[in-house]
Image (cartoon, rainbow, N blue to C red):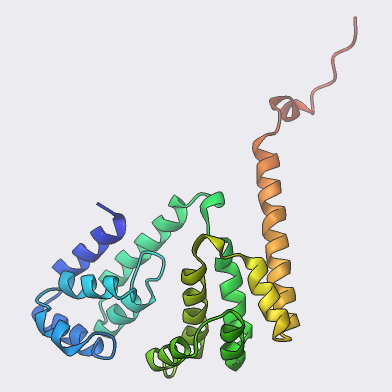
Length: 213
């Protein structure tokens, strides 16, 4: 079974009926009333959140928020273990190149995110939905708009498109930060590739060179 689903099943099995009721209350703004009425277990609730793209293995913020509200440190540690394992399972080549760009944009764009979202062809209706979804969390508004953009572009999503959109919005300083981070990432990848292909002879560089006969 997928490690994330294993985590969700584990969390569900550890919830009391009172805790499940509290989670359902916390999700009222995200899940419709009829769907919540049909939820009989943590798995049921998590399944709905997965279907609505509120939750997935790469975006566990909501799960962390819910477990924090329950003050279940034991379950938060399980989430920490999953996230640490997810990072170790991802090879450098498989890591999302947009992830670091998203972090930089979230840290620097602020209230200009709507202008950037429109430049990235995110519709006004989706921008309004994002504002309703995260009414008091500017960082999550920015991140969600970037997720919507990436989801719409799928495999075609590229950091260069983000940089181009940032510059079109005259957010040149943020664009510079993104480009610098990408260049550093590229240099690190080259360095790791070079170190992985070092000839065994170089390990013996301290030994005197053999003399020609």
